[in-house]
Amino acid sequence: MSNRIEQVIGDIEEYIDGCKMQAFSSTKIIVDRTQIEDFLDELRQYTPEEVKKYQRMLNNRDKILSDAKRKASEVEEKAQAYADHMVSESQITKLAYEKANE
Image (cartoon, rainbow, N blue to C red; front, side, top):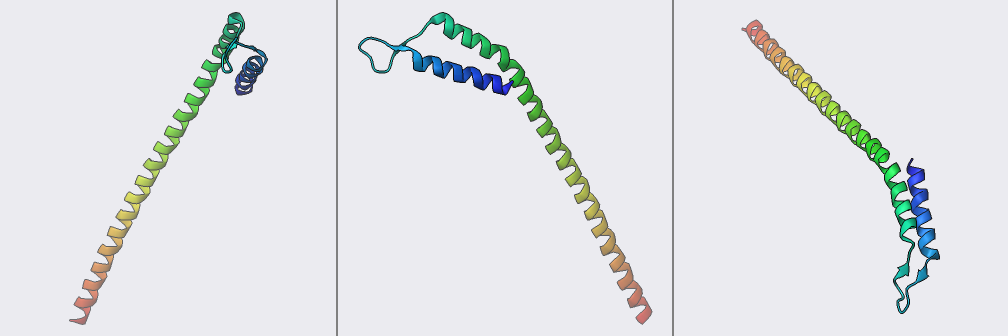
């Protein structure tokens, strides 16, 4: 679809390049209203599907980011629990050595 939209835009550019200049102007052109409306109708025909496609891509990106954040949080919690466990175990071992030395 995207290629079709780009093709229509290219067609519009070609059409504009082929239009006659308005008298006494170097920037204004004379266009066939029907032709321009046809181009716009064609763009409208293809644009909604493209917009939906990109919206799905954005939603998918948001879901991936959300999942990654959730997994990162889980890993962080597990790492903290492991670190707490190791500290606790270290303290127990230290206390055991102290008791043994007494």
